[in-house]
Image 1 (tube, rainbow, N blue to C red):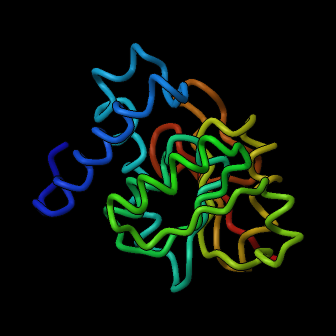
Image 2 (image 1 turned 180 degrees about the vertical axis):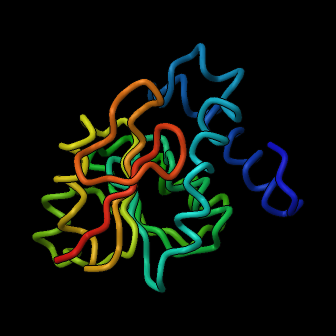
Length: 181
């Protein structure tokens, strides 16, 4: 994966290698996506980077992180602190290993968004991301409680699908919903 900063390129490439190593055991991504993982998943995730960088100070959260998408590429490229929410034990274990190997400022939390909000992570983030979590409006509803007022939810909804209500399209297939309360 090419990036203007060689250190970021190296970490993104190491992340892709880690996913390829673990994917066959955990069904992290489709086997047909592995040869084009950088293009299909990492580059797609990084399309949200300008919005992440523009956010105010504070941590970000990737809801339903699964294989770490988009949270890990965004953590690598932004240098921001991220929480990776993943309720499935095996995938959370993968995320912990990837974060450790890459030395990222990420915390893996093995909970659903609702459990995390009830556990004190409500309104604790400036950005929440959702990629392949649920239908766009549902994804916003799931993520909203985790975002502080003035922060926003970034929903990856696909270029052919409509974005959630009350959203602004920040890139083809990525919608931004500002949290007001």
